[in-house]
Image (cartoon, rainbow, N blue to C red; front, side):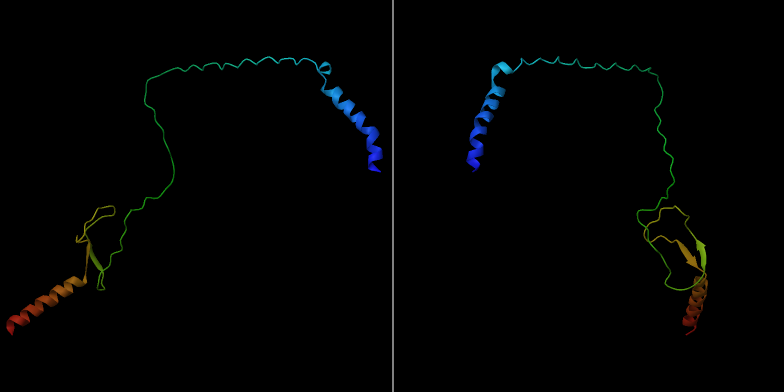
Amino acid sequence: MLKRYLTPIFPLLLLILLTACSPSAQEAPTPTPIPKPVVPTQPTYEVQRGDVVTQFQFVGRIRPVVETTVSFSIEGRVRNIYVKQGDTVTAGQLLADLETIDDLEGDQAVDDLNIQRA
């Protein structure tokens, strides 16, 4: 049944295909001109002598790379502080002392006297 419908249509399709592909039906292509590149104009600058300065303003906080917590092994009030904020310290350096050291020194003196008496 399908063959009965395709048989008259097939020659017609073949004729359309051949007509579309024939050289006489095509026109000669028209070349498009190559566009010329746009040449940008060179900007000119006035040169002056002087310093080039770039300034930045911002808010920030500076923290030390190494921060260590220090404490006394006994309780007491701080008597003297021997360093200031921002000072560089080394290991073993005396940073502060306590009021109780006076009491300990007095006790040591009393103990030394007791030892001499004995």
